[in-house]
Length: 284
Image (tube, rainbow, N blue to C red; front, side):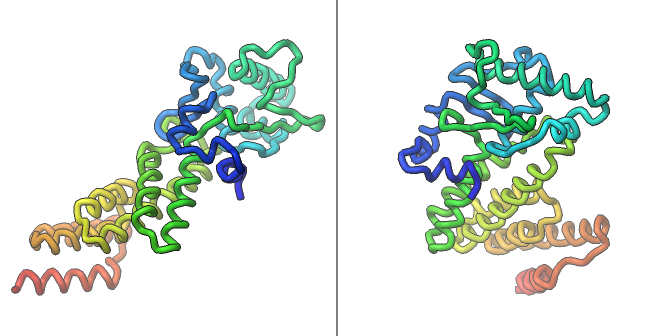
């Protein structure tokens, strides 16, 4: 169980409140979906207040890894790999100092930070307590809750929480840092969650015959992955159910040509069977 999950499940914790209450009652709020944003109460920490770009990068790392120890050498390898060791170490110490005082403006000289902690062996960690709220923790909580309801057969509650995940993930994970290599594993993690959630919502709404919802999540899935065959199959199925045979055929032909041109592959057996279904429908 991750630290963020433990915080949600801790007895008496504010994380047992409604998600909106958790967000509103937290002192610090950090958003990683959509452009990165940090709030101290109602006050946003705006771009000019950062001054040091690496301070924001370092805070992103801390927020994504609460409680995880990281040595000074590891931070240098991540964020100052091209500098001489002494210069990089100096930059790290100055950045840590700046970040501590940015988050806790009332921190006095030599007073220990409540959040950015340091061990004697020059390792740092971020002590994220209940005064913090992050949207990444919400995403993991909603995803786990949805899967739990799904396993119990409650697709109504499952779809409710799956949609909560979509509301975040569709904004993109820290899109301004698309080229940052160190964020790649995190981006892949949330892309995986997003794709799994979209496909499951497509399946749920197909079972319910709620066709507009099927199309909504199928098109989102194709936006994320243009090769997503389950999403295209769902779109074609919906058009067939609605009697739009020509549209269904056109979409299938376009997708087949796309796969052949881009990947050099043929559609799956299921898609070929769907083509036969379209041909039969057009003849009737």
